[in-house]
Image (cartoon, rainbow, N blue to C red; front, top):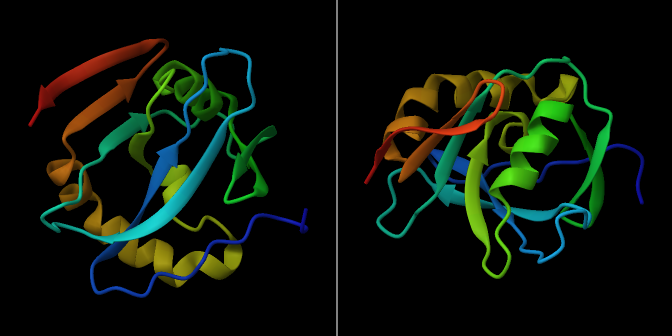
Length: 140
């Protein structure tokens, strides 16, 4: 695997990445996902957003994303384990994964932060993680 996770640059106007969390019937199976770009507010875009406390600033828990190793924080990994379905893909937006957090990603990160209110507003559901996974509020 290449050194360090590399995001594909966003190309669409009001484009965001969403994460397709691949299913597994085994709770302990490695976490695998794919990211893809969608247009925020697009008619066929359905995703759930995750709001959580990052905890550690840097990750040390490996997952496989776009066939690359990506290190996420323990709280992010735990949330993904809880949200992973047994038989169907779950589409999520998680800032730590869907926004380029690298030093070179600062311009994108600044643009994406300005869209975060709309990102949460357009989500079909928002999950809020405090110390355990709980559903926060609304479904569309």
